Image (cartoon, rainbow, N blue to C red):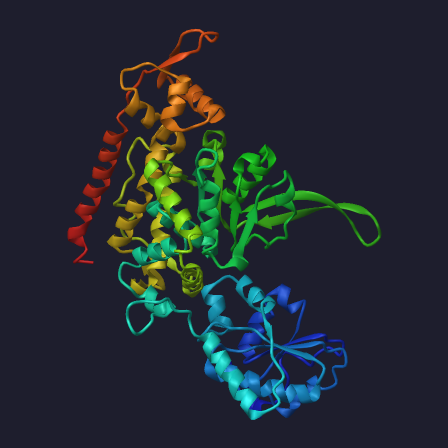
Amino acid sequence: HFYLKNRQGIYPNYPNPDTRKLLLTEAIIDTASLLQIDDIANNYTLLTSYGTNGLNEEILNAIKPLKQLEEIIFFFDGDKAGNEAVIKYAEILRELHPKVKISQVKTPKDEDINSLIQGHENEILIHLIDQRKELPFLFSIEEQITVKKEIEIEKREPKLPTSNSQLPTTIDILKQDNLLQQINKLIEQSGIVGEANSRLLLFIIASSYKTKQPLHAIVQGSSGSGKTHLISKIADLIPQEDVLRFTRITESSLYNWGEYDLVNKLLIIEDLDGLKEEALFAMRELISNQKLSSSVSIKDKKGNIKSVKKEVKGVFSSLSATTKGDLYEDNMSRSFLLAVDESQDQTDKIINYQNKRIAGEINENNQEKAKEQLQKILRALKVEEVQNPYATQIQLPENVHKKRRLNEMFQSIIKQITIINQYHRRTQNNKLITEITDVEEAVEILFESIILKIDELDGSLRQFFERLKKKFKTDDFTRFEAMETTGFKKTQLQYYINQLVQLEYIKQFGHGNKGFKYRIAYFDDIQSVRKKLKDHFIKQIQNLKPNTNER
């Protein structure tokens, strides 16, 4: 873009005399970009400073007569020159309007308005403006120097303690080898014990909320197994301004959100069992079609009732928890399925962690630093297009449930892993190129979820049945003996037993008044299925590896 001779003129135009909130940018192209976003153009008056030394007399004379002015907002570049210009200009404008609030949008380091638009959705700019901070009054040169130093410190990336003398920045971490393993360590450090593959998969799914095709997950588990706690802890690792948490969603509430309120968000649904059919249908539509369209009646200015079309866009990722996954077949086919580890080993890990926390042996500061670091990692990632040259060469097994949809989800996980590894990936035609290691990591992380898609039993029911098989190989057993073996209480236990009887995995005999007995009727070999599936993927990947050098 070009400025007029000697930087003359006002862009985009002289401010309205009734202006209350004035937003100043560093360049014409910045203002032009912000004017394309209705939420910004409709709520702020925009004005351009021609660079970090371009707040000239003509612009100041345009600002001076604004009698209704309440706030001046600087949205400059996130570099040293931009921050210093804000300090300098703030004091000049205070002389013109001493009672007006002056704020600064905290632009990420080395970013500007248009680089943010290229790497993110437009909503990031709205969010940054909403999170702006008021600048303090500066009465002396010493105070100005102090504030400059504080801004520079604030702009630096948070660092995690390491054994090295130099601490890594966020970009340093993103450039590390075995990045997913490093991320998984941070997830563990944040306070999520065990569940190594599940927690990493959930984080990857949650991190997709800024992409055009976000991912979704449903976590199964019995009552009190910690499924809700798990997804809630994962949500803590995502930038909190982008997280929406729901304990309950009423039938029509999803239709009433603003058109873009659910765009680039992570939705946490703590209890999927509490949603009625209409709410579940709305969720399915948002996940599948990324929008809800409804016909609603409104009154016009003359009081006449007319019908209009209302749309809610749903470009979000979601994590949900349920005890009864089989009830949500349509929702499950659109989501990755995970089962909470309800083994004794995992229980011991959780109890040991709880005891250490109560005893004061857990460093909570380190936990918070890990959360902040993971949030910074997600903010630093740019949303990129991905090309996977291996997409036609990795096939899912034939017996997988709803293979068409699962294949798309499988490729999406590979894509998201490639995006996370973007600092290690070459680009071609402005697209990140997937490498074979991305495919390997996707297979390893997704393995248990694919098993659940193949298995007729859902995750918690499978764990229940495996305990029965191990204890009662050929012996008959009663409900009380099953309760003692599995640790489940009456209601949940009877629900699982009834399911297994209905599916003919166990046989019920005897009389109700004397107490039923049960016997294992079908010894399916899930371990054999797991081995065949693992071999299936290993063989395909090994066949591709000789070609990687040519690539």
